[in-house]
Length: 520
Image (cartoon, rainbow, N blue to C red; front, side):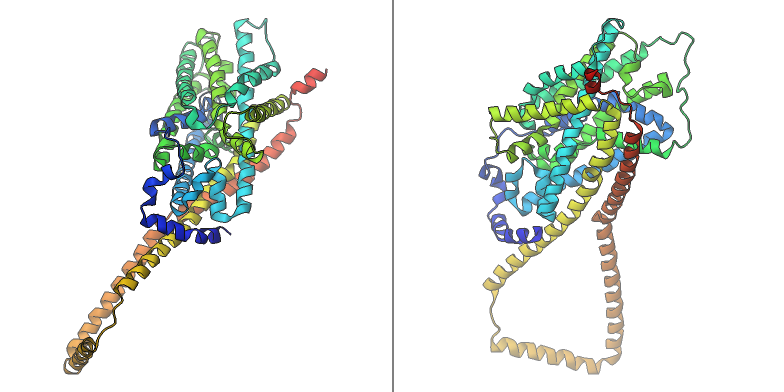
């Protein structure tokens, strides 16, 4: 299993440790000199979040009332924690077995195989592929529906091209973008995407401030209650939040392309703070102006204005750019399975274009992006976010401990072979004389020896108590309790959300399907 493969690689690792291997690791594996800095890694994180937290998250938070704020803070905090420990897993794995960098095209699965074996790697790979592929479908739907909205607003309803046709146009536009490589080849796309996200937020704020559509006046925070919302509503909001802030499928792909891999936690933190700041302002303004009347897509309630038209175009552009980065992990894995070259080839273009059009086909059949978000966020991303990262991290800490023990044992064996020197007869006589002198002093000082024994016993008891306290503190510090709590939460939330999504999908039988409309 994974432990045996680790043991088999322990000797080369120890040898590389002694030779200062880690300072030369990048050149040994031919790593590219063009690595992501902390700044560009943060841009990639913001790009992965995209505009969904700005235009599609406010509805979920507002529908939960005041409980929406602690809910989103709780879920995001757990996601930051699991993202950090997942990044630590890769750092530890590189130290224990540097050859793992050869699997940098699918790092999450490599971590799974390293900790729990091949079967876990296959499970993670399938889950990742489904999550990444499904996550691109809401991008297509929102982009197409926004373009339909733009046509209707510009022409005042006289010219409205269905989003079913816009899906086909977007698919044609996406294919050339998808032919690009990994995140380190997408610096320009990530930079443009972040500028677009910021512009969308500012333009949305302007549109809300300029809305004068309510002739009879309006009530701030209309119909927003202070009570506890229905549990089903909390589950739905949880699934959407988990979907919109899930970067775990692409997190390790970004990390392996970074100059300093240990800074992945900072990149995640800075990216989340940036996106949450934009989303928080939008949510507050939307709740103040529209209350519970806000739709799933904030843009649908905004009045006609130049800022709205520009916002719709920018949202569509950002969703397309975000798909290029977000789908990179899936594309790379499929290409490896089918034996495609890592260079830009015709085979790569065909594979990626086929996946894009498959996503377009599913979007044509299931056009409810909020339900798709809930299913993916609540059912598929739960294990990837809350269950697997803490589980892998605890196993990785165990392997790191075994590695340290093996390293110390190797050093002690070498030093003992060098310093081993048997005692001669004079040393033996000296030791014997010392023992006789010490034992002879016991009979002459019984009372003083009794007090010394009491003090020695008390000292040992205090030392033992101190060691146990340190062990308890070390246990608390080792993330065992926190990791276990996160895993339990992840299991419970995934099961409950899956149960709700099954009934929600069953009750929603009257979807408008583009394929059924075309058959008519």
